[in-house]
Length: 176
Image 1 (cartoon, rainbow, N blue to C red):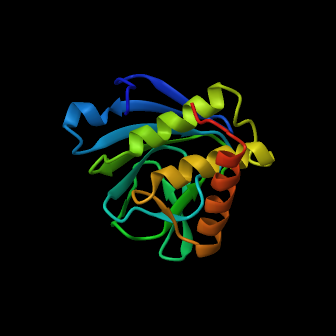
Image 2 (image 1 turned 90 degrees about the horizontal axis):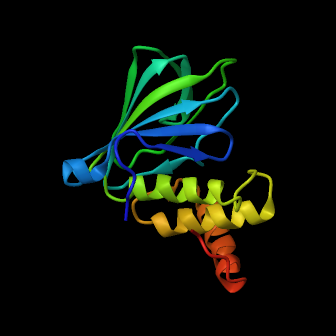
């Protein structure tokens, strides 16, 4: 269950910081609003869909690269992108500077829980790099636990996540 309050900062692997602006609890689960600060070169999760959520990105500073409808495009400060439910999407910061983005999920479902899980894994040192095998196992466990709210768009990616999550459970990995 999400516990972060408005103003709390979450940190995830790669140096991204996420400030909780409007927690899901404050809206009765109708939405959750977060503000991402992405360092240069950082990437988002694998391309994925939210079957029951709409997502909006409002770029506050910098240039945000968005993958939607099978193509990448840059979104500048002051611009927004809406992602209808069920559409494959992801993001990255391919610019040379930091990017700040307001992220809104409607309804909230378990998205804040997902971000808090990533923060706990990062802070505990269980996830240090996207190239570390044990980090990939932990991340797969969290992604697998997010189904059906967040589903990787690629069937191969989903199979890999399931296999790695299974291995993690066999090895008694525990997500904090």
